[in-house]
Image (cartoon, rainbow, N blue to C red; front, side, top):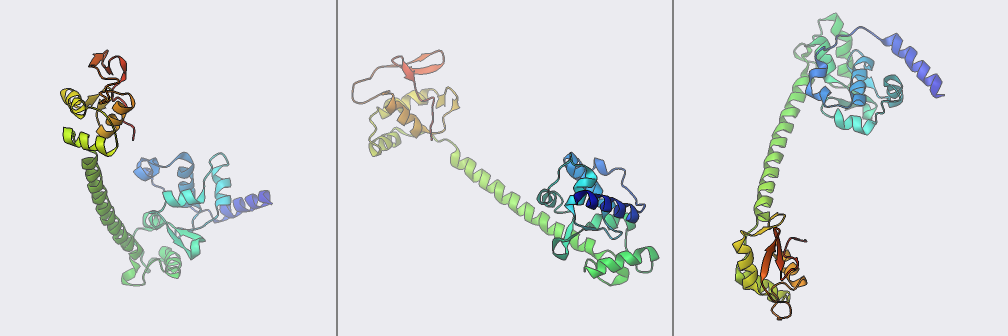
Amino acid sequence: MKEKKSKGALINWRNKMAKRFTDTDKYKKPFIRGLSGAYKLLWDYLYHDCDNAGIWIKDFEVAQIMIGGDMQVVEDEALTLFSDKIIIIKGGEKWFIPSFVDFQYGELNKSNNAHKSVIGKLLKYKLICDNKGLISSYLGAMDKDKDKDKDMDKAMDKAMDKDKETTKKTKQFKPPTPEEVKGYCEENKISIDHNLFVNYYEARGWMLKGGKMKNWKACVRTWMGNNYGSNNGSSQGRIQESEGTSKFDGVGTVGNWEGD
């Protein structure tokens, strides 16, 4: 069944094939350059398979046959990639490619015999308005939509930049005071010498082996877990440096893990 359909599609395609202008610079354009090989072929195929009004009867099964089985394409992915290049009409059964009409004919005019059938089809799907010589009003509408999208994108970018800046400020490390460390220790029943902790890291610019400290509370928990600077007297001693790694009485690494 598929073989019969593919042969029929080839015959129909040859029968309706007509000479068309092509843009020799199309592969230099960012939109085309950004597509993968399969979708480059699909986009080129749409330009050849659409009718003289730039309307393509959606058929991905035939499209796949035409561009080759080794170049797999998916409708949802195509819709995403071509979203600002096509207009979906007739409930998704057909796609309209505005740039096709613009490139092939320029401004449409009902007094031009070559344009009459194109104008008729575009009017049928309400893609242009029947006024002022039928200048391609759909292009103006698309430009307005694009301007709205650009304004929306700018607003979203601005909001995202603001959020990023707020997040950056929120995450920026602020060294704690001895009182803050003491309060955190008391609240979480952690027994370390808070003054020793602050003095130790303050002398080192709050730097860890992996870089600038990000979470002093996690370091406090690490000190507690390894009995560094404990207040219970069981593991107290002096903190020493060995090969760039902070150590307390030679037992383990001090605060080079930051946890959550």
